Image (tube, rainbow, N blue to C red; front, side, top):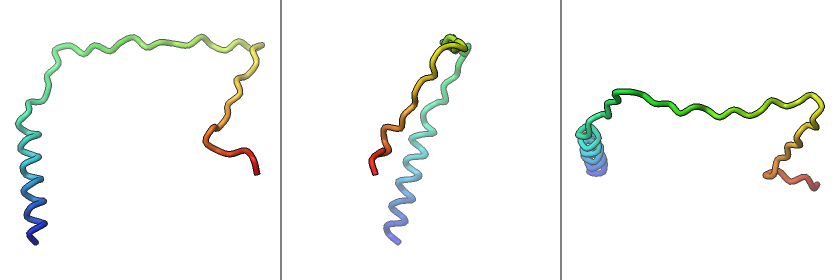
Length: 58
């Protein structure tokens, strides 16, 4: 039971610490422009995708 009390005290202290910091207020949200990749051309060879984490040898 003493462990439960200690955990409860730690949880309450953590919550008080978290709640003591004011939530940030943003006057204007700035989202950077996303980069775009060029589309694949129909005649271009397809990229080969491999799974480096899986062994191919049996």
